[in-house]
Image 1 (cartoon, rainbow, N blue to C red):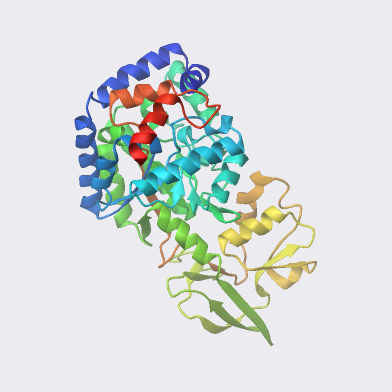
Image 2 (cartoon, rainbow, N blue to C red):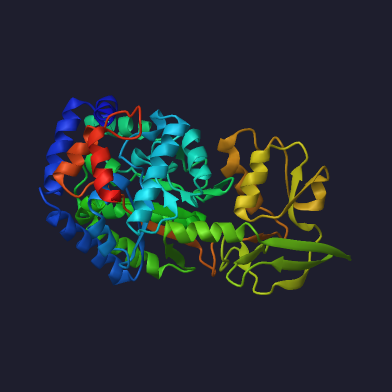
Length: 450
């Protein structure tokens, strides 16, 4: 009954009824309708020769492993979406770990490879992350970042109220303050989801006009590309036809952008982020304002240097791509960031994630940019810090976020929550488990594992 409670708390009874009516349109009594939807999704991926990431719940995989296995080599990278489709933030760390451990067993038994995880409803807590780390997941994509691209569109008050209620259930961060890039949570790479997603736009604001959907996606892409960040697009397979022309337009627009956009999977993003974290830049003074620079990195790495007064034609905000890995740089200041000795550890984490070399120091005028404790008083200041760095009038070196001189990144994802009407209705009545699963699920498990 946990999921019924979520609907009643964050939507209301009438929204639940409307949602059930919509579900009847999305799913059939067999999986044939879903097969057609998946084929439509796959045709879109094949058209642009890209892959998508599909998190799927283990209980659904256990009952439909034949269908998932038929998609393994077909432009889809799978991830774990929990054991059941429930709100894991309501469970203890041990309960969550038990669920995720059983999900791992189901995926391995079904021969479905996975590296990452996404929470149902994008609802998680620190206990979730601790459980995932203990189970050696490579990445998680449950954090959400909201891009405010809806101001120019008119929606009625009721739709806005529904929208606000659902948005409040996410642990959402606002893009005006936070950067949309992967982050390290110790050995786990946290990859943010870009909101508004299909649930907010189609189910809550009830947008059906393909032109409006296309404009919203285009606005999101433009903002994210301008900042050189990550666009993790979430569209559930059962809603893909609402987006068919919109996705075509988005992907076509993406392919035409220069510098290019990396269209990839969450697994590849996590692998790259782990590789990038090992890169280092050695900078040694030679005298006469000259520095010997050596970049220790893969050939795919994008090394850039701030070139003052060269915003036109630059790779990103005055930064130019540097092809060499060992060279001499002339500058009146060290081409890295000086970080106040008493500054917050969060700034250091941000600079590491951003590939920006730094030194802790008290010498403000020695470095291309100096970040003090006053520049960062809380997490919401991270964009302010990056703006200060990007405005440097001195040469500044850094590893760019993405490989192969990609300016930005786009990952297409779609959570698989149900194949049939019966699957969806079963989701609504999952009980808060005292033990791992209820009696009916134990019987399915017994048949599956035997």
